[in-house]
Amino acid sequence: MLRYVLEEQDVASVRFGISPLCELGLSLRAIRGPAYFPLQLPWVRRTEEARADLDHEVLDALIDDRMWTPDFLNPRPHSPLTRLDEELAELRELSADVFHRDLTAVHGRVPDVLAGPPRAAVRRVVAALEELWDASFEPYWPRMRAVLEADVVHRGRQIAQHGLGAMLNGLSATIDFDGDILSVRLKDPTDRTHRIDGTGLTLVPTMFTRRASAPVGLGPPMLMYPARGQGALWETERIANPAAVAGILGETRASLLAALGDPASSTELGVRFDVTPSAVNQHLRALRDAGLLVSTRYGRSVLYLRSELGSALLGGRTPSG
Image (cartoon, rainbow, N blue to C red; front, side, top):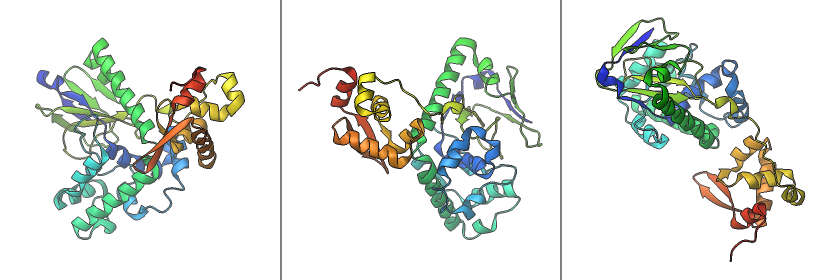
């Protein structure tokens, strides 16, 4: 049992944060034991081929059979807008003592693959995580982040309408708050009690936990809890199309055009509409060549957006100019 003691002044310092690195580290749970994370099975399956050539020797050393990960993969996010590159930059500067301490807390020792010179080992960990992100997260992160941000908005509304206690007690069935003590039933049999003492409590929604979890060690007070709405993340999207447009373009292309009022990548669109990557790219190229879409590169992804002509076609009006 983990207990956080909140004094009156601590109640005002409860805050939310979103951590890409935390999601990246916790995703190792779904990769290691996909049967325990049924909501994320579509993600595991879709990314399996992309993960084939990663540094699995290192990634496997970052999780044990209890699904524990070292605390350096669960940083306390500085804000709801924390970026992965910022978190990885901090991880690169991790001291050897903390690196070895956090690994030992999980495995009882430093795994052989990471037992060499600490600076080189940290660099290899960062490289393995960057590759995992590029292969499995970058195409889907906008949708994942949207779910996490929607959860934070919902929790804020709960506080405004029903108070902090109701919100905390609604985070997970394994969390209880009595007004003074926040109790979390963990799989870790150790009984731990921490006073917040003005340091603040950070609540982090995640896609990769089924119950509340917390850092293994004595780091800053932080709780990770299952985000709402993740069950709908991988549902195939269906959009009702104007019959005339669907008759001209076909249902799939009309659906893509209707959906691209907001920019999206071909990979994201393939997930949303249950279309293979090659097929969705073919449809997008045809729509772009017809002047109905525009595209721009963002990092390693190409984002598509409906053009003025495409909007005019959907709206049945003549474009300006």
